[in-house]
Length: 469
Image 1 (cartoon, one colour):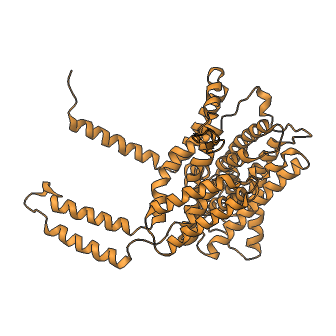
Image 2 (cartoon, rainbow, N blue to C red):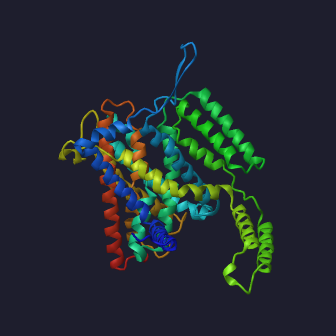
Image 3 (cartoon, rainbow, N blue to C red):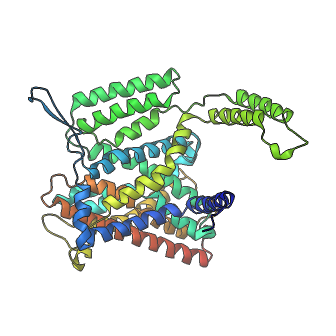
């Protein structure tokens, strides 16, 4: 048997890695990956042989069991933890942490960094939250399902960006920026909704302790602490206190994200001076007679120093976000989809989202109408009022027809909507049935909103209505 030379193997792996990176860096990749995970989860939940194992695995208890020597004290930590809760209460903390970092970055330097830039997407985001909540509440007023009003209020940025990238130049760049900024503002509102309305019974003593720990973290930031492990240790303590205080544990990620320092380790003048110095030294060690020796030993050392200096010019907040983003996008979110999108469907009537009940209401109908109708109407009407009153300006090269078409993509609520669905209906009798109906409606509503938005954008751009009417 002939062995493949090692250099041939390395060359093949290098080509494979380049192709993989080229695909994974595409803006549509995350949306496609999440969609595949949804399909896999539905298959797992509805395959007779596998479904019981799938559900049993998610409900497996994961706790540390400790007893005192005399056997009188029996303690479990964390209380009530299962694999499903690890995904929703631990892994999702990392997701909310990166969302918090992204919001902070956009507020500091991005599309939300000034009143002029932020006003339209923020007003539109409020419209895209208020209108779906009102529609859902009208459908479910006086029933047990009314507490799920927060489910259709979210916009999933991954799927929205995925569709925008596929549509290409049919959508004006200004509207792509607008929808991205709106989704970020929407995330912030969704975080507030979860924190204020979907927690448990509040333990004010533990909540007070968490405030003290957060204040200590802020003091570290104030006095210039730049070691990430200090903030990670405090973040774990805040998570534990939030978990037992009744505030949803994922909120600890958002709070700590806003405390992570945004100041770089090295100043601009220091970085430029050092890079110039190392570059001159690099050339002085260059072996002109033997170019294959680049970089030689001293040059490798200098290149490492240049890398360290450049790395130190990036603030901790950016470095942490950059390091966590691949894990969140390609590991945590797919795992979340696998764990939460698997809804067992007994028969075809389960897809009848227009089914209503006097007691449990119409969860599916409220969510579907909220996403498909409430989102675009709320975004468009609130934006129309803001622009006509001269508070804001219409995005460049955009007309109202194209604006409404893009607003339809705001009805793709997948990730955050499913997350809120897992927190809703705490006091309902048929809690699992209502949550499952909610997930089905989220999937159907998000799919409908995506198709509707894509078709309208194609029609409007084809007729040349992208310019302002």
